[in-house]
Length: 408
Image (cartoon, rainbow, N blue to C red; front, side, top):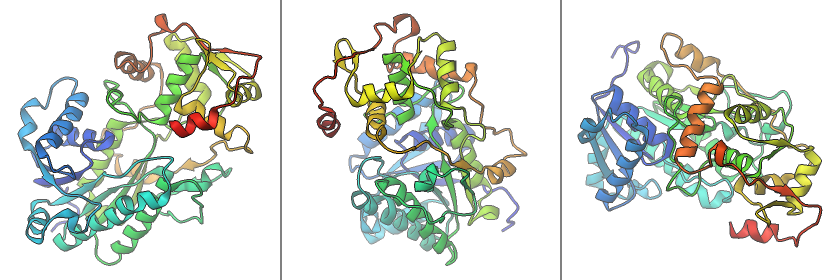
């Protein structure tokens, strides 16, 4: 095999096709290749699994470009949480023979669950997928996360390089992040034993840069930054922060991931940070919200966080709560926990240099595209319908924050 030739498989095995990134990668494969895509699902009702996967494709495919390509999708059973992926030996061998490359996006995602409840699926499951690839002698693209930075997130001057994962970082109360870290370490060890693997680390995935599409309806977890937008619009309050807020459109992550697959024979063993090389600051995001037409009032940081902590930010006479404000209220009494880490993207930018794949900067054009979809999906009201806004009361209400957070 010519290792310099582009790798263009006829058959892909994709896990997590009903997820935010997996669904966009599937849509990209249908748009840009003629390959057959085996989508692995742990749901034994494969017809229902197919329906959920096709709903994700339809959501991303705003121009109906791939409607006549859906026959190339084949949904197959497989559970990464079980030995042999929940299959008998014959079916396992059949699955191993069907694909020429595996793109592993499936994971149990929870930012509050503890590590033991996530390890079996996220770490042991990844090891099972890697074992399948080694036995079939096919390459693996593993979707990790830039959150492997762990506690280094708050260290001034820290840069997460693309050629290193272990910096001695801690993962206290970061169960999901720890599973991604351990999976990377495990895969790097297996690469020394013959596994053909490349790793990508997406940042905070936002909607498609061309149409804003993102699964905001029908999901309980919309992504913390979408919850941030919702809280800013609903309360009309903000605070000053110059922290970087990574915004990485999902189409960039999908296209960059497939570019890595295309070059996997020359980049095997390597890791790529798929984050925005030009992240906006929190203040810049707020300014773009204002430019779009929303009223967002500045409050001194201490006043903002104290109002959250004491349940004094009221909307329609009731204390305002959202995933974003609840997290802020939890850390309001802590020492400085501003995000300081930076992320090196030189390796992925070098790989993409001869392509037209670029991560777009967040400007008013992109923000308008993203917000238009948020409004159309019902996540937020339009600027014309934004009122009433929240008010900060001088009276401290009965403190029920922890009970509320527990219920949530």
